[in-house]
Image 1: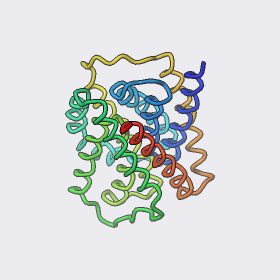
Image 2: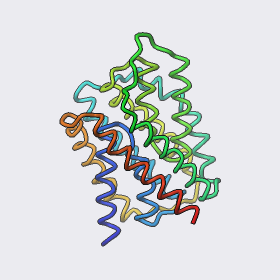
Image 3: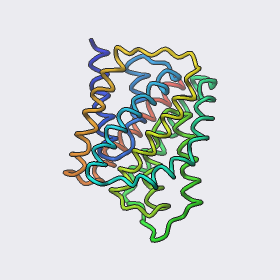
Length: 247
């Protein structure tokens, strides 16, 4: 019963983050799966990809309904990350759990610090395709290796490299995240990882509901406030993971 409650609460928080910011949700999912629900790091990163796919697609529908998704640009951006996502996904299951956890904690620190920054990415008048391709490849590698969506990388990259308005970048990032996560999950299909669906399905269900609420929350609360809240939470999670691994 306790595990079910943790799954419901964690899923709601993940959905809120993805729905409101297009980022941060999957980075919260992995530590929740490990420390609250007893998943191993390989199991957690695989389960996180499933959560990311379902939740991102749900949030994507909400943003697309509002006209805040650029489909062609998003798919082009995602294309650069497909091969890195597949390669990193196949390598991830061969990495020791301790190393995987420490890598994840480092990424969580980077994501938290980026969210805490007060500056909004500066929109460019011109599109930088090399910059977009490089960012897309990096995002794909992070998604495949750590099972995270990487929205904290995707959103600023879409703003600066593809000259998207911030609101559109958030919606389009969900398309990129879902695409990379699908490829990364496919690359792990042959790995022997067992998942506890009894807690994973409730987690996904509340994440989906949270994603819809997150979209409405984004319309009522200033993005800067949301970023600081989730950024602080990510830093706390990263420190706890690093300390727990060291002990």
